[in-house]
Length: 325
Image 1 (cartoon, rainbow, N blue to C red):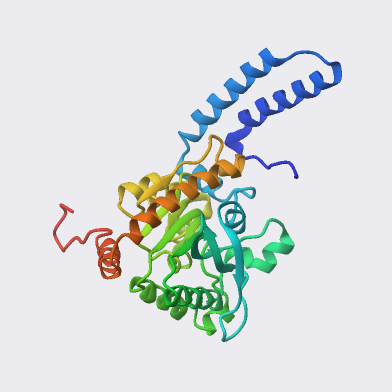
Image 2 (cartoon, rainbow, N blue to C red; image 1 turned 60 degrees about the vertical axis):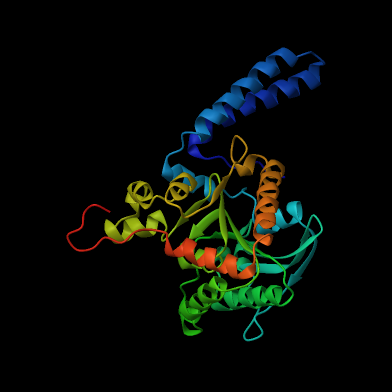
């Protein structure tokens, strides 16, 4: 595996990790015992990771959510589920590879898994369109959700996109209509729906997979109506103000839990999900199983009522002259 790229605020972490690697290489070459020095360095590294990641600024949370070594949808499918069978196409235009979906098993439970998929290199990113779906991607997702509803199986969606693709062709083929259709249909589906924001949750492109009974967020994921760069370009006419925009957007998991948008924060390992895929996948799997068990115990009419109430209660209205809200 190639060296993991690091973020600016991770510089001290990378430096200590480098010292550990050099010490291990020296011990192997010289045949000397360095266990006590290694233990001290590992303790220092763990403390530094915890201090760093517990005090990230919103713009740094954005950087972690976009980290190129962060696990993507197919990585979680491989780690959390078994018997994955991918399904393709919207039966109208083409197969959009920015969204993947298909049947899988979660500890014996048959589920439909759907998620945004980014690429690791330029070739794959072009194939996946950088995780930005066209309308046929959302139509494929809806086709698979309806299939799951037909067979009475839960739907799990993994959200990780900068947003829906805004190109001319996508708009000509009905991007807005495809997203709106997903919102309407998910709001009234009779099977349990759980979404997990695993990286970026950008605008309607994310919400089109997010009208669910439970919205979970990985600790360092983000969920927002617009990217900090886009917000800064609109409000201040310069992307240089993205840090100010990130502060104002309240896009972190902590913010969104407090606002009642997300239902649970799934903790990540010290150093973020990109530092330990297996531990992150284990936490995601535990939370997902727990919520599915709770949702499956409810009558379908009750689930729909609670789902609709959930979204109707997000936010608050402030009338003219009313500054108390």
